[in-house]
Image 1 (tube, rainbow, N blue to C red):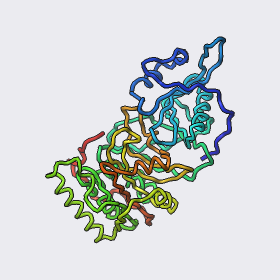
Image 2 (cartoon, rainbow, N blue to C red):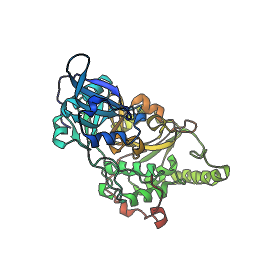
Image 3 (cartoon, helix red, strand yellow):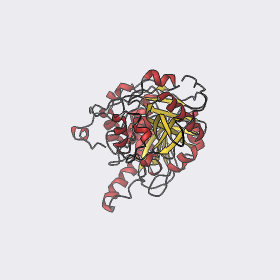
Image 4 (spheres, rainbow, N blue to C red):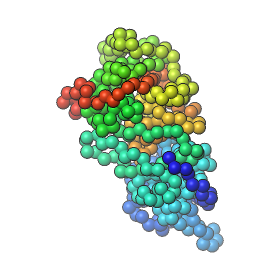
Length: 384
C-alpha cells in the first residue's frame, strides 16, 4: 500500500445527519441524486454524520464548500465516506483528520461517485471488487477505496464474497480463508462452493464449531485444523423446541466422533485475543464465532474471518452486510475491529460461550469443483 500523504489538518464542521432536515449549506452544494441516496435508508444505527468544510461569508453564517456523509459500524476502528460533494478533496481531507482525532486506524470511501484518480490523489487504494455469487444480484457500490492512517500495515487483502443465505457464514468464511491462503482459486468461490461446504458442515441450518472444523479438514486434508470450544455440550440450539434440539445435538456428538477419527483436535478453552493475534502472525486463518449485537444491533451468532492485525485492532472479513442500514461490502471487507471490542463480540449468544476454528497452511491448491456438489433443493436455499 502506498504511503499516506501528510496534508495539513482541514478546518471542519461535524454535525449529525438527519435525513429529514438537510442543512441549507448542504442543499446548496447540489448533487440531488446523491442526497436522495443518503436519505434512502435509515443510517442512524451507524452513527451517520456530516463532515463539512466551509468559508465564513460574514456574521454567523457559514457556507459549506464541501461535505461528506460519514458512517461506521459501531464498535469498530474505521470511518466510511459514503460520498463527498462540493469540494470533495477538502471534505475527504477533513474526514481523514476527523478519523485521526477519533483514533481510527482506517478510512474507507464508497465508489458511488468517487473517481479512481481522486481517491488515489487523496491517498486511498482501490479495494478488490467483490466476487459475484452467480445470482446476478448487485449489492452496494461497484468499487471502494481504503486508506490506512498509520504506517503501512502488513495486511494482505482477501477476496470478498457475500454469503447468499442467512446461515452459510461459516462455510463462506472458510472458503475465503482458503482462497486467501492460495489453497482455493478465487474464481471457484461462488454459490455452488458456498452451499457445498455448508452442506457438509451444517447442523441445520447453522454451522457449529466442531462440524465446521471437520468439514474444513475433509475439504482440505493437507490443512491443519484445530477447534476451540470452551463448553462440552451442544451449542447454537437454544432457540429450537426441545424436540428439534435432540437430533441436532446427536449430530454434534457425531461431529465430535468424526473429529477424533480424522485428527481434528478440540481445545476445551476459549481462544483469547492474544491467541488470535499469535495465530495470524503464524499465517494461520482464524474463523471466529461472534455475536452481531455490537456491530449490527441483534444478538445472533455469526462467523467471521480474522486474517490481519494492526496496532490496537484485528482485521476481519465479514461475509454479511445489512443493506437496510446503508451497510455494504465496503464496510464488511478489510474491517478493523478494536481488540477490546472483538474480545466482547467473541462471546457468542445465548450464554457467552466461545468458538473458533484455526486453519494452518497446507500445500497445493484444491478447486472447489473437487468437492461434492449440492442438490437442486440446496441450490434454492434462502437468501438474505
